[in-house]
Length: 324
Image (cartoon, rainbow, N blue to C red; front, side):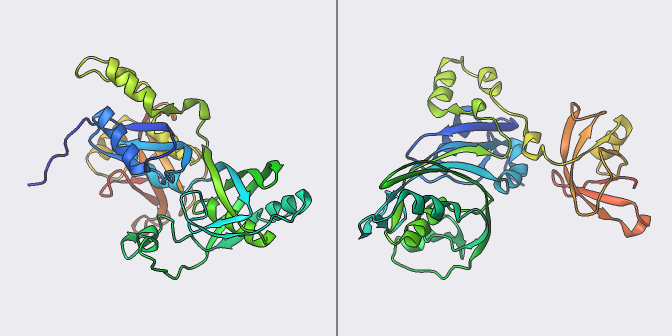
C-alpha cells in the first residue's frame, strides 16, 4: 500500500524574496512547513550568497515547475575586478590577484561582448549533476569533472555602474546561464580576474517583483494565525497556471470535463491553430477564467487520421483530443 503524504493539499506558487544565506532547499522546506503543504519544489536554486526572486511551487504546481526552470531570468550583479576566487564569488578562496589596468571603455566593451548566443562551461561549484551528485560535491573534494560547454543566450545586458574595481550589471539570460561564470570570463578577458560580490535575481519569466514576499513576512503571518488557519497565507499564493501563462490554451465543456475526469479522450477548442509538438494549457470553461486542468503537447494520433491528441502532464493516463 502506498504511503499517504502528510500535509495539506494546497496548490499554488509563492514568490519568495530569498535573503542572503541559506540554501534554496532549506528555504523551500521552511515555506512548506509554514503552509503545511503535502508537496513543494523550487524552480531552480539560488546560491546562498544570492538573493531575490525564488518561485516555490506547492502541491500540483510542482508538476509545472519545469516551465519556470526553463524560463529566462534577470539578475543584478556586482563584480570586483582584480581578484579571482575558486568559486568565482566571495565564498571561495582567493587564487589570484592582479592590478586593474583597464579603462571604463574597455570594461564596458568587454561586458557587452557577452550579448547574444554563446557556449559556456558550467562552474565546478554549480548544482549541475554528475552521476547523481552536484558538481560542487566533487569540487569541495578537489575533484575536477570534465564539463561539456552549454548553449546559453544573454538577451539583454546593461552596465549600470563602473567604479573600478567594481562593475554593476543587469543581465537577462536564458536557462542554464551561470552569472558567476560570466563574471569570471569577464575578468579573464580583461586580463585581471574578477569575482561576484553581489548577485540579486529580479525576475523569473513574467512574474512581477511586487508580488514577492519575504520569509520573515510569511513567518509573521503564520504566527498571527489561529491553529489550523491558513487563509492569510493562502491569499499570497499565485495561481499555478501562471507558470505556463505564455502557452496557448484549449478549453473543454462540462460534458468533456466528465470524460476527462474518467480518463477518456475529449475534444476542445483551441485559442489558435493547433500545432503538433506545441504545448497547450487546458481549461474547463469558455476561457482561462475556467478551471485549469493541466498542460499537454499536440501530437498526431495515427488512429484518427490527422486529429491531434494531447497528453496532459497532470495525469499521463489522460488525453485530450482537438480537431484541426
